[in-house]
Amino acid sequence: MFEENPPQPAKLALEDGTVFNGQAFGAKGTTFGEVVFNTSMTGYQEILTDPSYCGQIVTMTYPEIGNYGVNEEDIESIRPHLSGFIVRNPSPIASNFRSSGSLDQYLVRNNIIGISNLDTRKLVRCIRERGAMRGVISTEDLDDASLVEKAKQSESLVGLDLVQRVLPDQPVDWCENLSSWWGMSGAVERPSAGNEERHLVALDYGMKRNIARHLYNLGCRVTILPGTATADQVMAEQPDGIFLSNGPGDPEPLTYAIETIRDLLGQAPIFGICLGHQLFAQACGATTFKLKFGHRGANHPVLNEETGKIEITSQNHGFAVNDEDLPDDLVVTHRNLNDNTIAGLRHTRVPAFSVQYHPEASAGPHDSQYLFKIFMAMVESQPV
Image (cartoon, rainbow, N blue to C red; front, side, top):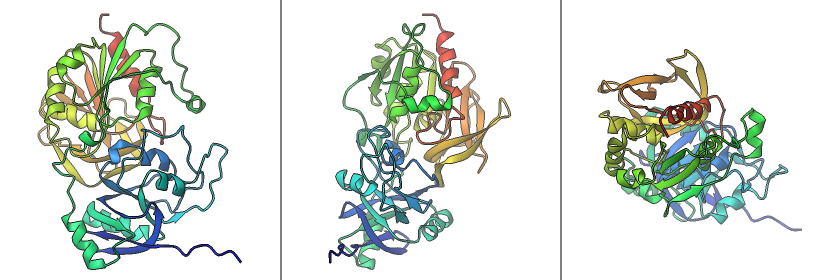
């Protein structure tokens, strides 16, 4: 009788000395990263391919992951950028008419090391109590003391420029619209006329594809530049609006991006998301700090302080803008209702604003897509 190969053991070790026993999942080997958790119940493929997770090992809090497989349409970048993946129960069946393969096959194909069949509730509790920690997953080294020491010696994300690892190589003229599936939420088709003379330039620090699709859906011409572009290079494109993308890690060491944004303020309307929000704030004189365990999930409540409405949002960040030293030029427009941290800012003297969450969703709720229309209204208010 045919017998399946027995599961291969794997271990996760944290820098505080905690070790978890589990089973190998995805590629085999050893990988290092900051261990974080995401509370989304779905959207694992978008999480895997979000460049903002570069340098991190992501734990899914929902226990059953992988049941609908993977497909080519839902990826948010050319490949996964995260360091490792942790799930409680990977589904042995991929059941969906859009599926082109299983989650395990996808991880193997992209050389992403994972671990399964461990107590993710205990792991998340450790992170919530002690904060995000450096960790290591291994299917090779199964010695507890050795793994803990390796975790302690691995690199910290604080002060590290991870954007350099996910930057695009060349400028791109983007011309891909939103998926037909997006229309089910009531989103309108790309305007056939009216905005083509407007040119949006996006600075890519690790941008998700659905952000670019939303910008294109506004009816404008869209050019994506690497996040290392200078203000002169941006203005050479004659932009009518400038977008600052999401991206991984600590904003503080990205002095080149902060200087560029500072030079661009007032030259064209600016809209920033996530890391772009933090860089915009720093360019205006604010500071940022590292959150204890970050905000990662698809159900984070945010209060729009200007309208009084609450949005359910998709979030993925480990840093936030400080309240204590906010410059006079910035006003808070949104608040995270879980911990009251700043979730949105607006400049008082020039047309520029930002949010600390993902209005493009993918995956996540669509409550905040109105922000793209606000950005477009700013662009249209400027003379051609």
